[in-house]
Image (cartoon, rainbow, N blue to C red):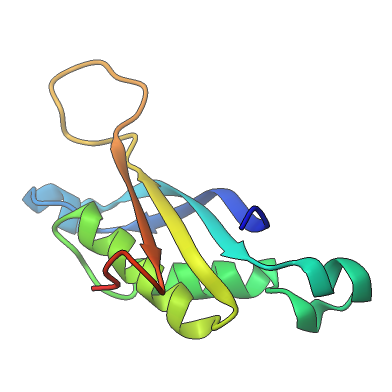
Length: 126
């Protein structure tokens, strides 16, 4: 399928990380979400009921990402992917990329993070 709904650069402040100061101070993460969904009916009907609303995607992702402290961004990304698939049955797969631009690394870098893909068929949802 080539149809997708996406949200890029969603900025969320959370307390994920293995370092103590990350749990105390937190940091701003950026999330990119790409949802595979058949948009044929939505493109014909022009009705929100035939797609997923960006605001709902943002709400589900924000609650899953910020609702619990994770040591690993891999776990936080997985929680977001699982929440999206659970909330939106019409989504067949979701890619969640978590950017951690302020990772405690003794180096100069533009970006670090993880990207995971979860689908209803094939890759594990857990």
